[in-house]
Length: 134
Image 1 (cartoon, rainbow, N blue to C red):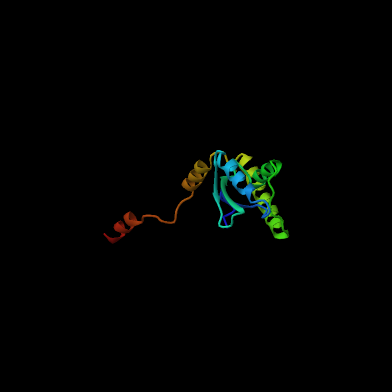
Image 2: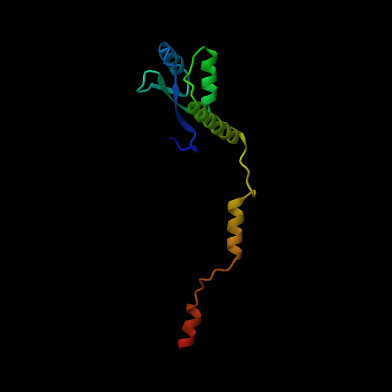
């Protein structure tokens, strides 16, 4: 399974067994899309898609295929897995669209200034010690 914090996703599309010709049609359709890689799975009813959530989402791709008449295998566990994937990708896409919030305007400068104002515990006492030994 992919690290959920990565932008690059690799997912499987499980087509219904009753319509194997759909897999080849979907392969041709998806392989013509930019920023999307498609390969055939070990099972003849599976396609493996690789994409960035900056460009696509599993839910969006699947919905577009359903609108074109493609049918997918549905079981309780497939629906549950897809619901989790769709939710996670939706949150990631939302977070990508949010601007980065800085707690301070110039964080590096603030820390450098604060560090410079605090005396360190590493003092060079050699000059004082030299005078004591004479």
